[in-house]
Length: 178
Image 1 (tube, helix red, strand yellow):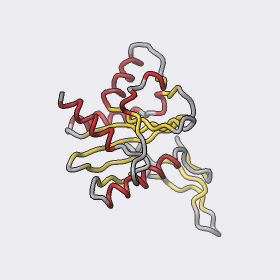
Image 2 (cartoon, rainbow, N blue to C red):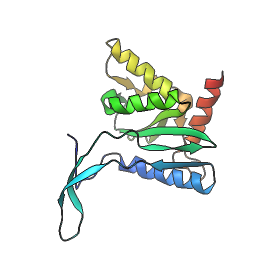
Image 3 (tube, rainbow, N blue to C red):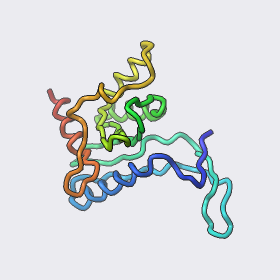
Image 4 (tube, one colour):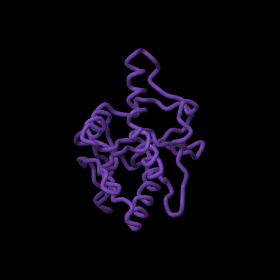
């Protein structure tokens, strides 16, 4: 059972940047995307500050974000990696299946992977994620390396968008049409 304590959840820096980007997109009427809260059950609460100091996750969540971009439904998860090798164990089976089901309903699913040591953001299409999952099923290592990634899908900040994932969506859509 996963737990949460006063140190907080991993990935908050990336999520802060994505939340800021999502607010920028909303203000510019480009997209409406929201963070999906992870359901927790409090175990210990500090009586003086009324803050939760220990809790556990009630159930598996889906993905971190869900919304619409110009009428197109999207969902994605945000992952951080402090090295060039990303462990696929960071992607939970229930998340993968949710994204797969979302794609089957004509939505767009993807990951945003933040390579913190490089300060580099990557838009990973669901088709690419699926290929890595299939590779693992064939007995390959349960990871992928930074150098394997498609250079066209690295994201840069632009204007008020710190993690400008709309460009990744646009490229993703154009390749789906081909």
